[in-house]
Image 1: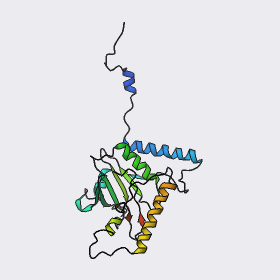
Image 2 (image 1 turned 120 degrees about the horizontal axis):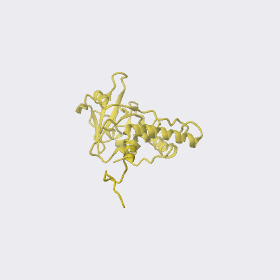
Image 3 (image 1 turned 30 degrees about the horizontal axis):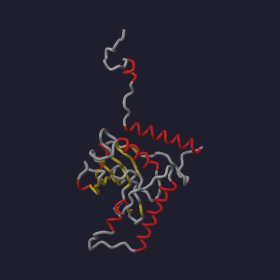
Image 4 (image 1 turned 120 degrees about the vertical axis):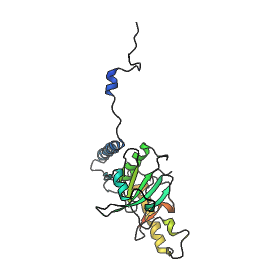
Length: 225
């Protein structure tokens, strides 16, 4: 004679007990970072490195939502410096270190899910070059997803080319060439020297950020919307 389990699910109680709890996103990022480092070490036969010999270690910080809310005064409107399809970018300052940062708060209704966020954190944490904006850390508290970058005080190249106010000087030719050369170096690193290579698909003036000395920094938007 046939028989049916009392649970009605077709799975034994022992199997249900063995079911592992779902890992948190922060744990997944940490585990993936460790696996990535081990893989690079086994492939290269030495310590993790990119094609240009630089270290490939993961060195991003984890922040709580409370910490990032504090440095942006609870994400006040006057701290808002940019907005796009991904969400909003705020300027913040850590009181203990005095470091000024740009905080990218991802839109809850956006197209980027947990998997895409995890991949973006891993990729950005592995990419280091003088002409790339550095990822400082991230926040994955509950349903909050935020990325913390170094702050570029002069904004984007677009802000210095289009609709200039009368009191704002135009970029001279030497400065424009300096910015173009910096963008080219950043792209060369991504396409030819990063391991694995990254194809930057969203190069435009609004994605080229400038520091105080007009040195060019090209932000990494691995998954452009």
